[in-house]
Length: 281
Image (cartoon, rainbow, N blue to C red):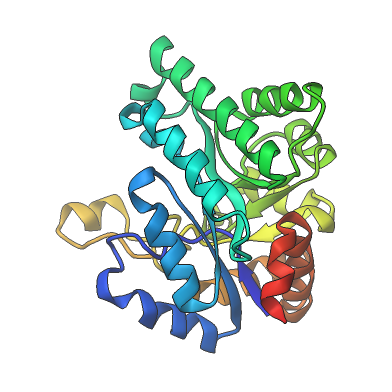
Protein backbone atom coordinates (compact mmCIF):
# COMPACT_ATOMS: atom_id res chain seq x y z
CA UNK A 1 0.00 0.00 0.00
CA UNK A 2 1.09 3.54 -0.80
CA UNK A 3 0.31 6.69 1.21
CA UNK A 4 0.24 10.05 -0.56
CA UNK A 5 1.25 12.31 2.31
CA UNK A 6 0.53 15.55 0.43
CA UNK A 7 -2.21 15.91 -2.16
CA UNK A 8 -4.44 18.89 -3.01
CA UNK A 9 -7.28 16.90 -4.52
CA UNK A 10 -9.66 19.76 -3.69
CA UNK A 11 -7.83 22.07 -6.12
CA UNK A 12 -9.87 23.57 -8.97
CA UNK A 13 -7.71 21.73 -11.53
CA UNK A 14 -9.59 18.54 -10.61
CA UNK A 15 -13.06 20.02 -10.67
CA UNK A 16 -15.69 17.28 -10.86
CA UNK A 17 -12.99 14.65 -11.43
CA UNK A 18 -11.72 14.63 -7.84
CA UNK A 19 -13.52 11.45 -6.81
CA UNK A 20 -12.71 9.77 -10.12
CA UNK A 21 -9.00 10.47 -9.62
CA UNK A 22 -9.17 9.21 -6.04
CA UNK A 23 -10.75 5.94 -7.12
CA UNK A 24 -8.18 5.55 -9.89
CA UNK A 25 -5.44 5.98 -7.29
CA UNK A 26 -7.11 3.51 -4.93
CA UNK A 27 -7.29 0.90 -7.68
CA UNK A 28 -3.51 1.30 -8.14
CA UNK A 29 -2.80 0.75 -4.44
CA UNK A 30 -2.91 4.24 -2.89
CA UNK A 31 -4.58 3.40 0.40
CA UNK A 32 -4.56 6.86 1.98
CA UNK A 33 -4.15 10.47 0.92
CA UNK A 34 -3.56 13.50 3.14
CA UNK A 35 -5.26 16.73 2.01
CA UNK A 36 -3.58 19.82 3.50
CA UNK A 37 -5.55 23.05 3.59
CA UNK A 38 -3.94 26.23 2.26
CA UNK A 39 -6.27 28.95 3.57
CA UNK A 40 -9.39 29.55 5.61
CA UNK A 41 -11.57 29.31 2.49
CA UNK A 42 -10.78 25.63 1.97
CA UNK A 43 -10.85 24.33 5.56
CA UNK A 44 -14.31 22.87 5.02
CA UNK A 45 -13.42 21.52 1.55
CA UNK A 46 -10.49 19.39 2.71
CA UNK A 47 -12.40 18.12 5.72
CA UNK A 48 -15.43 17.12 3.66
CA UNK A 49 -13.29 15.56 0.94
CA UNK A 50 -11.39 13.44 3.47
CA UNK A 51 -14.66 12.18 4.92
CA UNK A 52 -16.07 11.37 1.47
CA UNK A 53 -12.99 9.47 0.34
CA UNK A 54 -11.96 7.82 3.61
CA UNK A 55 -8.74 9.82 3.76
CA UNK A 56 -7.11 12.40 6.07
CA UNK A 57 -6.70 16.17 6.16
CA UNK A 58 -4.69 18.95 7.76
CA UNK A 59 -5.65 22.54 8.55
CA UNK A 60 -3.37 25.52 8.12
CA UNK A 61 -2.50 28.69 6.21
CA UNK A 62 0.03 28.32 3.39
CA UNK A 63 2.83 30.91 3.29
CA UNK A 64 1.96 31.85 -0.31
CA UNK A 65 -1.46 32.95 0.96
CA UNK A 66 -0.23 34.90 3.96
CA UNK A 67 -0.54 38.22 2.05
CA UNK A 68 -4.32 37.88 2.06
CA UNK A 69 -4.62 36.37 5.53
CA UNK A 70 -5.24 38.48 8.60
CA UNK A 71 -5.63 37.90 12.36
CA UNK A 72 -9.20 36.75 11.79
CA UNK A 73 -7.89 33.86 9.63
CA UNK A 74 -5.64 32.64 12.42
CA UNK A 75 -8.57 32.97 14.81
CA UNK A 76 -10.69 30.89 12.42
CA UNK A 77 -7.94 28.26 12.25
CA UNK A 78 -7.76 28.11 16.04
CA UNK A 79 -11.53 27.71 16.25
CA UNK A 80 -11.61 25.00 13.57
CA UNK A 81 -8.81 23.02 15.21
CA UNK A 82 -10.74 23.17 18.46
CA UNK A 83 -13.99 22.14 16.82
CA UNK A 84 -12.40 19.23 14.95
CA UNK A 85 -10.09 18.11 17.76
CA UNK A 86 -11.81 14.73 18.06
CA UNK A 87 -12.06 14.10 14.32
CA UNK A 88 -9.78 11.12 13.64
CA UNK A 89 -9.26 12.30 10.06
CA UNK A 90 -7.57 15.53 11.22
CA UNK A 91 -3.93 14.43 11.34
CA UNK A 92 -1.82 17.62 11.29
CA UNK A 93 -1.57 21.38 11.14
CA UNK A 94 -0.64 22.27 7.59
CA UNK A 95 0.30 23.32 5.07
CA UNK A 96 2.31 25.92 6.96
CA UNK A 97 5.83 27.28 6.68
CA UNK A 98 7.92 29.93 4.97
CA UNK A 99 8.59 30.71 1.32
CA UNK A 100 11.68 32.81 0.61
CA UNK A 101 11.77 31.86 -3.08
CA UNK A 102 8.89 33.93 -4.49
CA UNK A 103 10.24 37.49 -4.86
CA UNK A 104 6.96 39.15 -3.87
CA UNK A 105 7.09 37.35 -0.52
CA UNK A 106 10.65 38.39 0.25
CA UNK A 107 10.08 42.03 1.15
CA UNK A 108 10.92 42.73 4.80
CA UNK A 109 7.26 43.26 5.61
CA UNK A 110 6.06 40.01 4.07
CA UNK A 111 8.92 37.98 5.47
CA UNK A 112 7.89 39.24 8.90
CA UNK A 113 4.21 38.45 8.27
CA UNK A 114 5.13 34.93 7.15
CA UNK A 115 7.28 34.47 10.23
CA UNK A 116 4.59 35.60 12.64
CA UNK A 117 1.94 33.44 10.94
CA UNK A 118 4.26 30.42 11.03
CA UNK A 119 5.06 30.90 14.72
CA UNK A 120 1.41 31.23 15.65
CA UNK A 121 0.53 28.05 13.75
CA UNK A 122 3.31 26.20 15.54
CA UNK A 123 1.73 27.32 18.82
CA UNK A 124 -1.60 25.92 17.68
CA UNK A 125 0.04 22.62 16.77
CA UNK A 126 1.63 22.50 20.21
CA UNK A 127 -1.70 23.25 21.88
CA UNK A 128 -3.38 20.32 20.12
CA UNK A 129 -0.43 17.94 20.16
CA UNK A 130 -0.51 17.68 16.38
CA UNK A 131 2.39 17.26 13.95
CA UNK A 132 2.89 19.84 11.22
CA UNK A 133 3.24 19.69 7.44
CA UNK A 134 5.90 22.21 6.44
CA UNK A 135 6.29 24.16 3.19
CA UNK A 136 10.05 24.61 2.71
CA UNK A 137 11.42 26.83 -0.06
CA UNK A 138 14.78 28.46 0.66
CA UNK A 139 13.62 28.69 4.27
CA UNK A 140 14.82 25.56 6.07
CA UNK A 141 17.06 27.40 8.53
CA UNK A 142 14.27 29.77 9.54
CA UNK A 143 11.81 26.91 9.85
CA UNK A 144 14.26 25.15 12.12
CA UNK A 145 14.64 28.32 14.17
CA UNK A 146 10.89 28.40 14.72
CA UNK A 147 10.79 24.74 15.74
CA UNK A 148 13.65 25.23 18.19
CA UNK A 149 11.95 28.28 19.68
CA UNK A 150 8.79 26.25 20.10
CA UNK A 151 10.75 23.52 21.90
CA UNK A 152 12.33 26.13 24.16
CA UNK A 153 8.84 27.15 25.29
CA UNK A 154 8.64 23.77 26.98
CA UNK A 155 6.74 21.53 24.57
CA UNK A 156 8.31 20.54 21.24
CA UNK A 157 6.16 20.35 18.13
CA UNK A 158 5.18 16.71 17.58
CA UNK A 159 7.28 16.28 14.43
CA UNK A 160 5.66 15.95 11.03
CA UNK A 161 6.74 16.17 7.40
CA UNK A 162 8.95 18.65 5.56
CA UNK A 163 7.06 18.67 2.27
CA UNK A 164 9.02 18.70 -1.02
CA UNK A 165 12.30 18.80 0.84
CA UNK A 166 15.24 20.08 -1.20
CA UNK A 167 17.65 21.35 1.42
CA UNK A 168 21.17 20.49 2.48
CA UNK A 169 22.32 17.36 4.26
CA UNK A 170 22.83 19.40 7.43
CA UNK A 171 19.28 20.79 7.26
CA UNK A 172 17.93 17.30 6.65
CA UNK A 173 19.72 15.94 9.71
CA UNK A 174 18.44 18.83 11.83
CA UNK A 175 14.84 18.13 10.78
CA UNK A 176 15.25 14.40 11.41
CA UNK A 177 16.60 15.15 14.89
CA UNK A 178 13.39 17.07 15.59
CA UNK A 179 11.24 14.10 14.60
CA UNK A 180 10.43 15.02 11.00
CA UNK A 181 10.21 12.92 7.86
CA UNK A 182 11.14 14.35 4.47
CA UNK A 183 8.72 14.34 1.54
CA UNK A 184 9.76 13.37 -2.00
CA UNK A 185 7.69 13.16 -5.15
CA UNK A 186 7.60 13.82 -8.87
CA UNK A 187 10.48 16.30 -8.93
CA UNK A 188 12.89 13.50 -7.99
CA UNK A 189 11.96 11.50 -11.12
CA UNK A 190 13.87 13.92 -13.38
CA UNK A 191 17.42 12.91 -14.32
CA UNK A 192 18.39 16.58 -14.13
CA UNK A 193 17.43 16.82 -10.43
CA UNK A 194 20.86 15.59 -9.36
CA UNK A 195 21.02 17.14 -5.90
CA UNK A 196 17.50 16.05 -5.05
CA UNK A 197 18.12 12.51 -6.26
CA UNK A 198 21.36 12.39 -4.28
CA UNK A 199 19.42 13.35 -1.16
CA UNK A 200 16.88 10.64 -1.89
CA UNK A 201 19.51 7.89 -2.12
CA UNK A 202 21.74 9.09 0.73
CA UNK A 203 19.20 9.78 3.47
CA UNK A 204 18.49 7.02 5.99
CA UNK A 205 15.48 4.90 5.02
CA UNK A 206 13.51 6.00 8.07
CA UNK A 207 13.60 9.62 6.81
CA UNK A 208 11.56 9.11 3.65
CA UNK A 209 7.90 9.60 2.80
CA UNK A 210 6.23 9.93 -0.59
CA UNK A 211 3.86 12.59 -1.90
CA UNK A 212 2.49 13.93 -5.15
CA UNK A 213 1.54 17.53 -4.27
CA UNK A 214 -1.13 16.96 -6.94
CA UNK A 215 -2.06 18.75 -9.12
CA UNK A 216 1.44 20.29 -8.91
CA UNK A 217 4.99 18.86 -8.93
CA UNK A 218 4.37 16.50 -11.89
CA UNK A 219 6.76 13.62 -12.60
CA UNK A 220 8.66 13.72 -15.87
CA UNK A 221 6.01 11.76 -17.79
CA UNK A 222 3.36 14.38 -16.95
CA UNK A 223 5.58 17.41 -17.42
CA UNK A 224 4.99 19.80 -20.34
CA UNK A 225 7.99 21.99 -21.13
CA UNK A 226 7.92 25.76 -21.65
CA UNK A 227 8.02 25.55 -25.45
CA UNK A 228 4.96 23.29 -25.58
CA UNK A 229 3.13 25.45 -23.05
CA UNK A 230 3.88 28.51 -25.16
CA UNK A 231 2.39 26.67 -28.13
CA UNK A 232 -0.84 26.21 -26.21
CA UNK A 233 -0.47 22.81 -24.57
CA UNK A 234 -1.59 22.90 -20.93
CA UNK A 235 0.72 21.86 -18.14
CA UNK A 236 0.34 18.23 -17.19
CA UNK A 237 -1.78 17.63 -14.10
CA UNK A 238 -0.31 15.50 -11.37
CA UNK A 239 -2.61 13.08 -9.55
CA UNK A 240 -2.44 10.71 -6.57
CA UNK A 241 -2.81 7.96 -9.16
CA UNK A 242 0.77 8.76 -10.26
CA UNK A 243 2.19 7.89 -6.84
CA UNK A 244 2.78 4.16 -7.51
CA UNK A 245 4.77 4.92 -10.65
CA UNK A 246 6.69 7.69 -8.87
CA UNK A 247 7.41 5.20 -6.10
CA UNK A 248 8.59 2.56 -8.56
CA UNK A 249 10.94 5.05 -10.23
CA UNK A 250 12.40 6.17 -6.90
CA UNK A 251 12.62 2.63 -5.53
CA UNK A 252 15.01 1.77 -8.34
CA UNK A 253 17.34 4.60 -7.33
CA UNK A 254 17.74 3.02 -3.90
CA UNK A 255 17.97 -0.54 -5.22
CA UNK A 256 14.61 -1.50 -3.71
CA UNK A 257 11.55 -3.16 -5.12
CA UNK A 258 8.43 -1.05 -5.39
CA UNK A 259 6.77 -3.27 -2.78
CA UNK A 260 9.61 -2.74 -0.32
CA UNK A 261 9.51 1.02 -0.79
CA UNK A 262 5.72 1.08 -0.36
CA UNK A 263 6.08 -0.76 2.95
CA UNK A 264 8.94 1.46 4.11
CA UNK A 265 7.29 4.78 3.27
CA UNK A 266 3.95 3.66 4.70
CA UNK A 267 5.66 2.85 8.01
CA UNK A 268 7.36 6.24 7.94
CA UNK A 269 4.13 8.09 7.14
CA UNK A 270 2.40 6.44 10.10
CA UNK A 271 5.29 7.52 12.32
CA UNK A 272 5.13 11.10 11.05
CA UNK A 273 1.33 11.38 11.27
CA UNK A 274 0.30 8.90 13.98
CA UNK A 275 -3.46 9.43 13.57
CA UNK A 276 -3.25 7.80 10.14
CA UNK A 277 -2.90 4.38 11.76
CA UNK A 278 -6.49 4.37 13.01
CA UNK A 279 -7.73 5.03 9.47
CA UNK A 280 -6.25 1.75 8.25
CA UNK A 281 -8.28 -0.45 10.59
